[in-house]
Length: 482
Image (cartoon, rainbow, N blue to C red):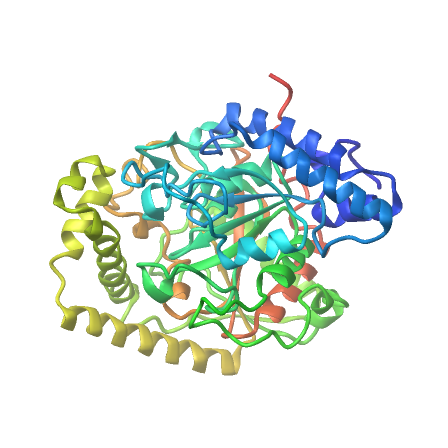
């Protein structure tokens, strides 16, 4: 195992290689990652809590070590430390969703499908990671757990809503994390924190319970490299009868799909949309770094053309439709708690709940019409182009404690995330890769989007770009011991 000697710096694939050879024990890895998690918590507040995690994690690691000694690993991730966003059910651990409205003392006796698959495959669970209240926005701060900071600059946001997972992965507090993505919530923090995140085709990763935000919401892997993303997908895409909208079995393994990635890019038809036809103001430094990443695809033999997809009747119409669906979902989230609960909410969430309550069923169905038209337009677009490339986010991380950047003119988080939420509307697979840094050393992400069900294609293209070195030099400051 070349490179770092600290197990906390290894990918899941590297850890498993060490377990298989006997050079490394799951217990050794768990101890290193628990120490790193404690430091990540000090630096960024990435976890809801780490209290009581250590003993359970070490017990799972010890059981894993015994299986590896017998040559009988439980599955594809036996002994690998993982974190889970505090929006996803995990048996024996409260899932508080960043809200003071959730009772921590209820029975927590069920795993979500993705967590159940991790458990079956022998993963070692660490703490639950932070989220804004009910995952409602693109930054991570909540009335329950406070602000989650960026690993590169504690005065800036980690992004959201899976900001805790992104910060944890970036700092080595587990190589794998499960996040959720309803409008960019794994891809936004991946871009801000310099990691990889995939929003797969809707239904590819089973979801339970169903999200109040409906079919906008996905569960997605967050990792430090593409091969780990594919490995995690091979685990969590397993079927679960509790999800009525899940897809059938994938046509093949996601790790296997990475074989010959660089050669597979040759001849690929790639559309590069730098600003959705001038509708998005992109920071010049972000634009420069992303264009450099796109040039790597040309160097690999892809046919790259600047082309913009047709987005509804313009991006503003897409945003309006998304707001109708998203704000209505927020109102539904809060409804069971009664009107008196409003005073406990994040003020911004309280505002969009009030907006969501004003929509009629006809307003909602009109938004669904826009969504379907966008999906049809993207289906036609991908008859010409295999992959669409955009910036993940048009900016780098901004100050903590704000829903929108200061002096940006935006009123809601969707104003500065125009490249992410459209593909929740269309249910397409989209991956964010780190591709460089701006002048302040903050990460920049590039987004690859493919047609629905082409998850393997988007991962194979991402792997080719990763192998070309686009992420070289994107590393947070070393989390030295406190």
